[in-house]
Image 1 (tube, rainbow, N blue to C red):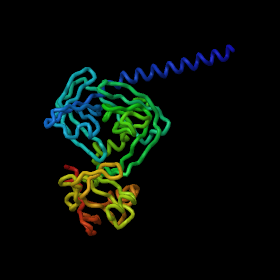
Image 2: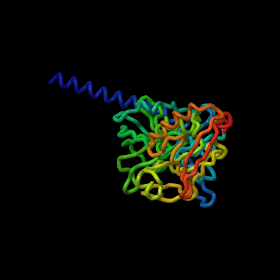
Image 3: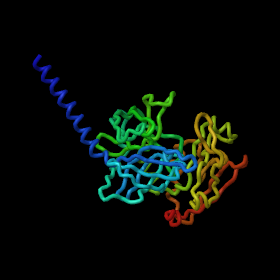
Image 4: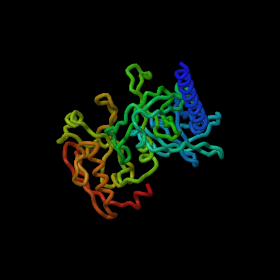
Amino acid sequence: MRMLFALSLVALAASAQASDDLSELYRSLKPSVVTVLTREAATRSGGLGSGVVISSEGLVMTAAHVVHGANEIAVRLHDDRIIPAEIITSLANADLALLKLAYVPPDVAVAKLGDSDDVDVGNQVFVIGSPFGLSHSLSVGYISGKLERDRLADGALLQVLQTDAAVNQGNSGGPMFDEEGNLVGIVTSIASKGGGFDGISFAVAINSARSSLLSGSSLWTGFDGIFLGPEFAALLNVPADGGLLVQHVARNSMADRAGLHAGTQTTTLFNREVILGGDIILSIHGTTCTQPHDFSNIRDDLESLRDGDTFVIKVLRGGQQVELTGVVDRESWEIL
């Protein structure tokens, strides 16, 4: 009996210590988390989301849908200071956006970017944000899945972390931290039948967010798209089992100079929002684009090209197969 009692005390002490550690971690990370406030001039309505400061220069990561359509954006810090902000980059396909503060307080707190490749199913994570406007609320859960989505975002396949940590309206754009306080994801969405939290939420893995918003390391940051499965491909009369439906093309990028066309009409197909009217890429440099992993192989091949080398993109446009020829020009690309 004494042995059992002693073991119980040890377990309680360990549990209390873990709780204390999380409380200390929360207090240390709270200052880096912000509330994103938006306003649309046309409707005069306001919006609210979350975000996280990721550099001493005042860069803030958030979700694209939080700031989409906003005419005015401001960030509220943990101590209620409000600072205007502007959009530096917004990637609708990845639902990621990068903001910059109009001025940077000398005491600004910055979150440490982690490595989401090191995150495993079963690891504990926690989310800080403003659900229903309740600023800096904490929710705790576990990684319940790691997903590679069929979306290409600024040259990289999008990886998503699934968790059971509670996420609600206002959490969008907020940070997901690991047990050591490293930023491992940006909260973007939930899986819900009734509109509220049903036990499954998603965050874009920080490695995908870093690659899309910060690195600019790929030749293919000039466009993004959605990989088409057999049902999508058949619906759009694609002469293959799949392809890459182009959503956006960055002006003056190599993809733009090669003549790639972006989508023009937003609609909903198979319960997801897509932009139709753009090119459907069938192959790049001789490799087909029927599966997401194909693009990883394509990127490896194209990264070996030198400035001045040409590449061919075969697309389906207006029912006709068209070959586009581009030229590798890293110097001008890096300026973009």
